Length: 324
Image 1 (cartoon, rainbow, N blue to C red):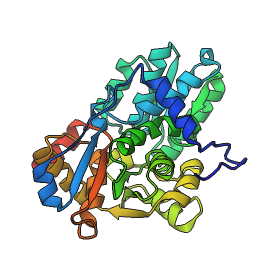
Image 2: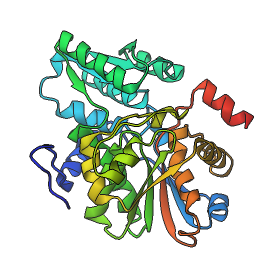
Image 3: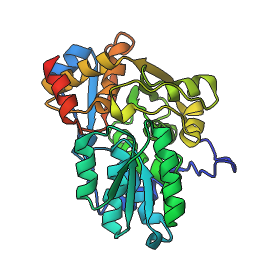
């Protein structure tokens, strides 16, 4: 497994993932992974759907939030995070578990269901900035003013280690998978998958999937340097206009491929999960399946996993899904 660099300060050893599993085990049970005959027939492959949509926050990121707060040495200072929603819920959920004061900054026009969920967890929500980059600047200033610990959506070793417990579950159950498809917003999931696959299933290809309308992570991976890109996707879980150094460093060595799909392709995958896998996925949670569908001929007759990373579809998203 690739070792860390001093500049990133990231330890990419399996023992960090195993420790994260120990820390979150008392709070989160293992999530199910099922295959569905109708979905298999449509795709032409054996498809295992990992259901992170059943997490208490409705998304996989809660694993990382709990691991980070469990390992935080001085919780009394409180935390600040910036997010379009699922990272926010993750940090807010973990903060409530550990009795930590929590403030969340979201960019303009956030998913109202995610705002309500964060507030219900006891965190305060501030809406500031037209983009995630501007929201991040506001969060950084807020953390400085309040003396709180700023939690990045991705440049956090403990978040990646926590998220990696998901892939520990997938590859422990199915070590002979040909590939695992992972949606990418900030990149923590794809980086985590690379780390676990390198240790447990080196023949398993890790394939990242992102919206073509917000390709910052894809273009950074392809160019091997961090870039910003326009963020025009309606899929809020993938709405990231800039890349993050820590997951990019891991993905650069670990990804087998990185696919771009259209928002319409993601919506079709959402409908397929709804009708053929009895699963309500938010757009980001359907992106992995959209990626698989875009290369289905390559994986015909093979065994793969797609991660349904979340089920937090807001009212407007549900209207688009059901009307199309």
